[in-house]
Length: 436
Image: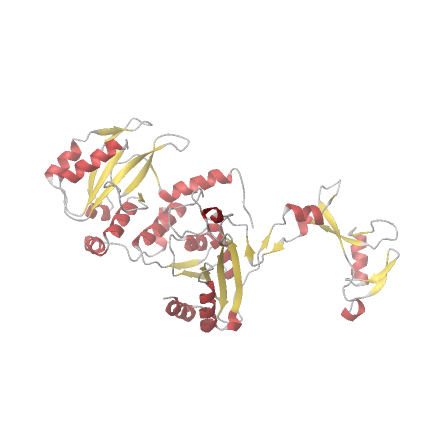
């Protein structure tokens, strides 16, 4: 499966581009051989190790192996003219204390004293002369040394000691990024940006990759786009992008993520293919995969689809409505039916809404609802919003055609699925920061 796709990816890759392949250690050795065969050994650039997890306690459950904490990212080029932007990381506290132990009283600037001797001596072409009573081979010419002395950048710690260069911490570019990455947290159950997609990667990881391997206005292609982290990173960093995935859920999630992050106007900037555009397309999707159809309909309502599709008691997704400040919200349960429907289905949803003490329910059907079905919904009563006191129908029926036409149920203000993640991230950012 990967061989034919990697062949095509090499075909469409520009001479200045690079391919980044993310995998785990169970497949990395096979893929390395495959990549060498397709791209050539000479075009191997890097093997990165990303620490994707904290320590495991597998041994306590009887595992007879060391904790498996990392993923692998292979980087290959198509030519020697590939784009590769070197990134730097901030110095860690231990390094700063060791290398920059002094502080200027007048300015408060932190500095350290560094060796100025010329490694290799005369054999490396370093000049020899006297500086503050000490003769050595030096890194700098006599003229450059005199300039540094006049600027106060040459310090003799004590009489007779070898003079040293005064380097300020704020002049350092940072530590050049290496091939082991331990500073990017994984997506776990508590991660602020978590969308519930099983293979979701941290945005910081993809931002770093896009920053290294491309320039503004370059094209980033992700042929296994998932929930759209790579295209989100590309959009954020001013790159053009193409995202591909095989599932309707992924395409809908990418669309929702972009709209919720960059505003509804963002939708006019890209073409969306692979999701139903008319009733015939919706019927085809339902025939091909009822579960995919359900996910698509829930996402079209800006709801959150169920992670599991069994034992859901007829509920296929949830919309969160805002009920007060400080993140207070309530649930609107969604039930999707692509086949035959009857009043019993509507009653079942009403019973689940009442049983789960949810605020409201939305019933989405492919076929036109019968008079009896609408009567059940009309008799379900109303929901009074605790914030503004407005009343909304307790149960609403909407057809797939109405959904495609942009008609919307009557709802209080909602929390969009990805916007919820962004709000959680903003709250976290108020307590901690991350930089690279």
